[in-house]
Length: 627
Ligand SMILES: Nc1ncnc2c1ncn2[C@@H]1O[C@H](COP(=O)(O)OP(=O)(O)OP(=O)(O)O)[C@@H](O)[C@H]1O
Image (cartoon, rainbow, N blue to C red; front, side):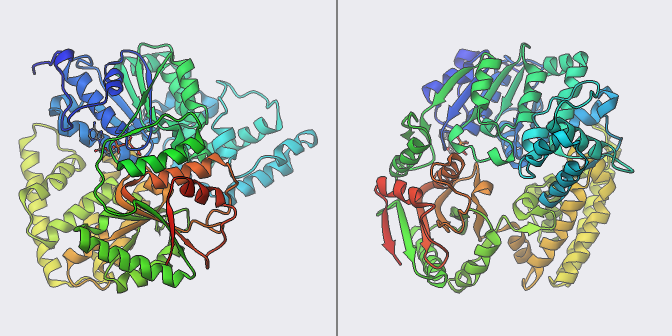
């Protein structure tokens, strides 16, 4: 394949990059690209990958490693690179989440972990809840020697794991604890490693074990550095203590160029252990240059002006960003709505959305309802009035067993299962077969070039889909039939084989969690649906207005966002000047391309605690109207 000279290389699918993005794209060493919302940070990474691969600056067999925080972000980035580069190039782009990557290292090199910290093989993945951590800390307090009790008592379940266990560098050999905190951390490790019959460890622990194994095994560390001379880290502001330490042990001092992109004004994960000084530390530890980007490709100029007011509240030195998108709406681009009752607010919102869609030729998915938390409560308030306006609300943050709707929809197994049901429900074009046929070859472990195996698997799929089609045509959607079809798909795919095929399911119970959630959600979607196509549209949220927490909306964008619940009740933990609260507000506001509405309802609560947020909107010239 012909290489492109670096000076001749041009970006794909976009007109151009801003001048500083070009500089960052061509950067030889490490860089942190710090840019506000809508700057095209993910797009920049996809273009840099194409640049490095197509110019041969990352020649075969070397690879690029991209680390994201959420699996949909990792998939999205991989898809963008696949779209732009030939398969022979894009297969050298590895895009994974932090957790998937560190877990894969632990799984592959488990025996390289020093014996004092080595988990059983296999091990389970643990997701301890707040109550369990509280119970653990109470036991630890009880068992602690008297002089250390006060220190142990000061630990809190909210941040014990993320801040203390996450920041604790494991020594190669366990040594006696020097403090009450260290004693408690060691107890935490013992409780995870020693669980019977298998160790039961969290993702924070997996991050730490991966870091330990690289520190303990210079040859594995060297192999990693040689494989990946280029590393990308997306959403760098969310990097936790454990993850940052992993990057240090993996790549510091090596000939590896790390490109970290992020926005410190969107740091809303400190509660989950994100370290506030990640960018500064990175610049110092990796001799990285800081390259700010100033364009905003998402939001119209008027919205960018409002965003700037909030950005300056977060950082008085925040640079002015330059809007690249045009304004497409008349009238106000932002408003505060003030209503006396929840019923009135919901009614007005439903009618307003329905009218706006018709007037502007927009689809339900161009809008998003954002809330601070407890999306189920807002769903209960809004679903009925929306239905009266002919709209269907979709609570993306809705819990389904041990996962959420949004996570289910981006899950590999779930995507495959729904693709099969789609084939069963309609006669679909050849393209619809691509995902199931490719996945089945992997699941059946058919080697590349095994023509007989490929033909056999293709036949197996054709026969299965034909029978499924006949039965789905004769069986109306219902809770019971949905469950029966889900079971049939599971049996066909063979869950044990699925678990062996995809790294994310290789240990722990993620596949069981997703399979349960899939069955639950399919049953709920089939309930009351006239046809299977409709049931699957409901399943996938086609034609529905998404409702989600601000945390779930990170990285997403919508024509119009409506933030419901800007009051003290929903923002109970907010304190004036609290950067995490302001950043949450900033993330919500900056998801909008054209319009942002903030709904305040007097029945829900007061607005003293959140007065500063209203003040920022007022300062930005946003009008408040009574509804
Ligand atoms: N160079 C570019 N030219 C034109 N459009 C672009 C360019 N880069 C990105 N975009 C578009 O701008 C929008 C924002 O990009 P993206 O979502 O990557 O931003 P981001 O920096 O990750 O934002 P956030 O931090 O808010 O999630 C997307 O619709 C993307 O397709």
